[in-house]
View 1 (cartoon, helix red, strand yellow):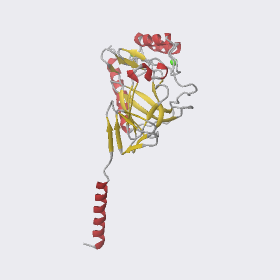
View 2 (spheres, rainbow, N blue to C red):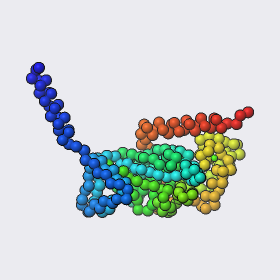
View 3 (cartoon, helix red, strand yellow):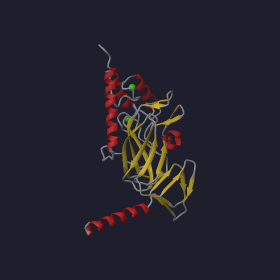
View 4 (cartoon, protein in one colour):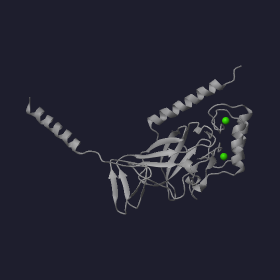
Length: 283
Ligand SMILES: [Ca+2]
Ligand SMILES: [Ca+2]
């Protein structure tokens, strides 16, 4: 064996030994537990799995991305009898919790039948953010006043369904035992009113079917059931509640989306199209 080859093998062996000596650090704390991190202190690890909470002015940091266990239910799409929701795509935005509430990250995701989705935010640094959910025919809804502490390398948790006060201005509606995002802003102008009702009425009169924004309850048919939800919310003057001065989110902005999420979204829309075809009345 040549001397060069022997040296190469020795270097490789040393590299492997070195890698083994740098074991990854992990911190895990369960729901219900709290870590107090005093001012000036840092708790850092390669991965931090935290379902509990942390207090103090220190920081919890990690090398991983910012993960969020997110739950929200859409009023019209949620069936309180079965406790299930029609799955659909939503946008979730991270906006800085102080004026001008800059949007720093977003994710296009599909809420499952329990309203749950796990999101990875790749761009946002740790900080305090408003979490904003935007659905194609619902009222844009912001998380509660003050913002949520979001940390990289850990699992952040936010659930809109557990209390009305989870939303800015208590802008959630109770359905059964779960708080839901108001349905019915069909034209996405931040208020539920006669304009939305007119759009639904038009589509209902022509027996419109399919994946359309005027289908407020997600059954792929536009009819009186959709009008009823909208009418109720319009009579209660439901509108977007958000910090004063916060601008309208530009839905055409560059969105971050993983390949897996892209595939899931396409599959759901395809399934809904197929379902629509099957629902066509036979002649
Ligand atoms: Ca509207
Ligand atoms: Ca419908």
